[in-house]
Image (cartoon, rainbow, N blue to C red; front, side, top):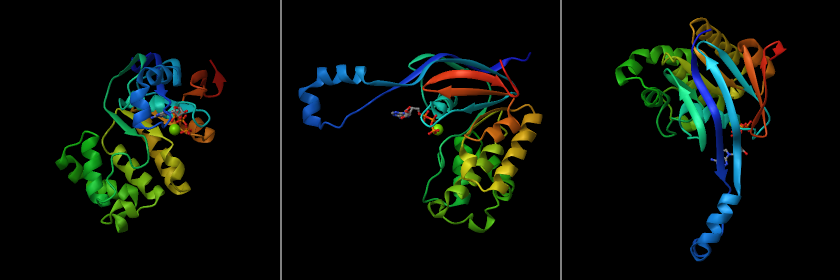
Length: 237
Ligand SMILES: Nc1ncnc2c1ncn2[C@@H]1O[C@H](COP(=O)(O)OP(=O)(O)OP(=O)(O)O)[C@@H](O)[C@H]1O
Ligand SMILES: [Mg+2]
């Protein structure tokens, strides 16, 4: 068995539920407010543990609000757990929210540079891969337009194209393919398959059981902030 590259160890993450009350109200009733905020914590994840081996393709599935994106945010390091520990090994390319790491007023081409730098490339590297990134996205005709004019599918194309060109060791994908058309989704799935062959670890959040079964060896079913089961594709473990 190879080494784990992601260890999620008894992780909990909560958010405080805020109720708009106005600043005056808040200042006059500060102790009550703090007590209430503690009481009204909402657990997005409750004592989650799992390990992912190097080169494994791992799916996460579950209803809206189950905690799937929160898991990816913790692995990407954009969220911190309130308890427990997340350990990762290797360069991560996260494709979390649609358009994250992009600036609406910059063109597609400028955003490629910006996003590539955020993902750890140098400007020169990004420039040398520019043509390949544009080709993969199939957005050549729009690449010098500001991306505020892009459709959501076009933004997803651009995000996916940059992420797969940073040579990631770990690829995190949060439902971003859902807004792509069927042809582009297929192209992305093929790209993920070729990454898989190269030993890239993939974590893939989707509502499509079909896509999970195509790519993943294991899948976490998450519901109400907890892992309900971990299945090997084809059989339960
Ligand atoms: N920044 C935040 N502040 C407050 N609550 C949050 C925040 N982020 C997530 N939550 C809450 O945590 C829970 C889990 O959210 P999460 O985004 O992980 O769900 P999800 O499984 O990705 O859902 P979906 O399928 O709709 O994308 C939800 O109830 C959500 O309201
Ligand atoms: Mg989500």
